[in-house]
Amino acid sequence: MTTDMTTTGRAIPRVLDLAALVRKRSHFLFGPRQTGKTFLIGRSLPGVRVYDLLDSSVYLALSQRPQRLAEELSPADRVVERP
Image 1 (spheres, one colour):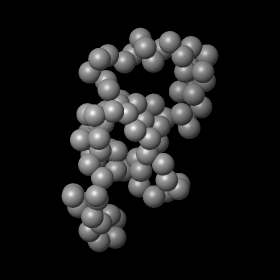
Image 2 (cartoon, one colour):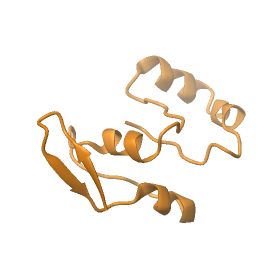
Image 3 (tube, rainbow, N blue to C red):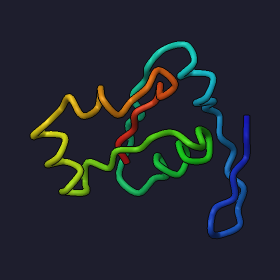
Image 4 (cartoon, helix red, strand yellow):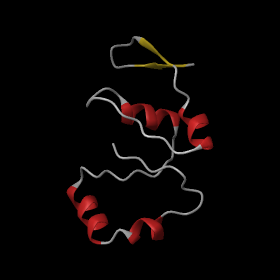
């Protein structure tokens, strides 16, 4: 279990070890908006490639040419996340 500090200074225990999970297989991380999913991924998996599909230019580029993902991702890029 890890502990993160929020902006309020309270420690929140994290029971999910994302790094261990993604080494085994792919997963979906579901939850309501503004609950810290992206923050958790950023803290647990630093340096992962992120495609923000809420950014209209990213969304349009990928929807018009989805093969761009295969061209940009290398075998080292094992995690794809949408904030």
